[in-house]
Length: 266
Image (tube, rainbow, N blue to C red; front, side, top):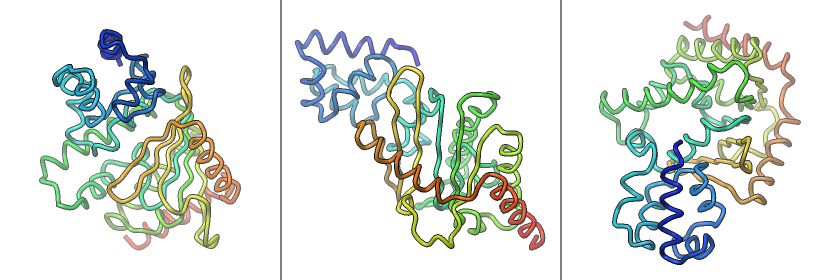
């Protein structure tokens, strides 16, 4: 994103005579988050921007002119800041518990997932959300970056979202990406019983010029983590799960057999 927003925040903070830590304390944020915003590496969510406006006495300027705010109408409030990081990441590692990761979803699968929201979205709302999700997937059009690894819980493969045909198409899409070596995919078999990521979905992100971050999500909630200790702990849980997952070739064979099974039902 343009750094105009970050520079404006820094100017307003300095005019108020506040350090980054003082502003962070007053706005109920972390100093590192303020630093990333000022450097143009992060975008505050709407609530953070409102608190910054309140502390700095800037009316609603920081809220109204957040980069990408116009796109957030179709994104959950807790996910909107993550979308910007996703576009900047050099490496992304995904764990999918119930649904395929958003950047790997086909249009038909994504439409089914989005239509399941409650309260049910209108067709227009669903279309807008679908466009936003498909735009996220364009990061895979670059043949080399970001490097993407995906761990899929077997439950995400067994749950027939949209029916056999849509599931077969979704799995075949992941197979194609994996065989082309654009992504690396591993399946965690249900026979494991417990694994370290069983409680939520997880995205890990690395960047060229900033510390790594993590994002975890549950039912209607999501949390962006940038505390080094928390991110390191989540990376460790991901590594443990990866050690229990099927190897790449075994995963491909499993994906192909599952897709054939759905085709057979169709």
